[in-house]
Amino acid sequence: MTNSSAKHQKLSLDNLPDLLTVREVAELLRVSPLTVKRWGKRGKLPAIRINSRGDRRYRKEAVLYLLGIQPKEEG
Image 1 (cartoon, helix red, strand yellow):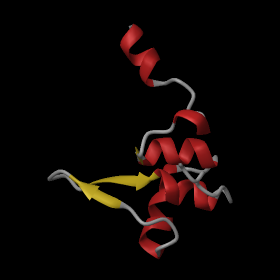
Image 2: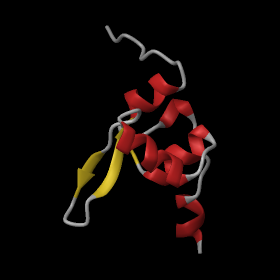
Image 3: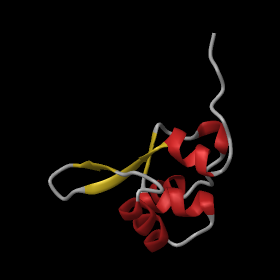
């Protein structure tokens, strides 16, 4: 089952995708997925809803901001 082990690689701040799942954000911030969803409802961490199920995705910049990390300026 190499596919599932590749999916569960540790996230690092250096290689974050632009949009993160609830589980990825929870892992990075060391909180439960339910906490991440609550923060979204309160506006602390705005979610983007995708697909017909309404799955949540979170912008990398918003998560880094919560961590107190400012995005690097390019150019």
